[in-house]
Length: 212
Image (cartoon, rainbow, N blue to C red; front, side):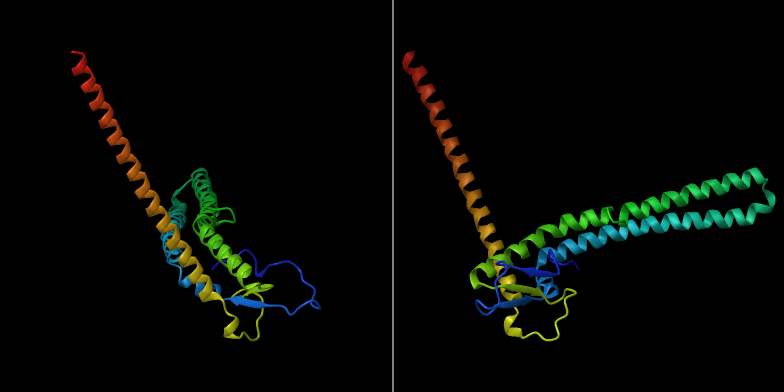
């Protein structure tokens, strides 16, 4: 579960307490994410990739384990030179395994980058929806109930999670309508161009007939 931008979202700027009562709301990020289908799809895609990467790591671990067992069983029959050579081979594979782990799951690894690519658009969408609600409702503070911020009590009437989901759903529907409208407009323009091209060709053909 990722945290939305920061543990505590503060909007509208700093307002002195003596000027007016502070208007506060909170969100439940886990609830919001559970109700966004794009997040579920992104998480499934990420989990599938992570499973594949873990399998690669597991295969490498098993290979190293078998090489160590093999060396231990054959050590009595090998020269010191061959033993050192096999140990070096094992060490090389262990180094490669460490690089693989870091490449997949390190701080700047593939998992982190893929998660950022998949989750960032959803994170931005939620953040923008909250900003729109704040601008409309004039909230001074919006807290994330699932963050590390301790909330000893939260009155459900200040929970705007459903409003955030509704705003995101509405935005998505509007984008889909706009995309459909654009698609129809482009189809109409293509049809118009074909008609004009046919008229032009017909006019050229009629002009040739007349000149004959």
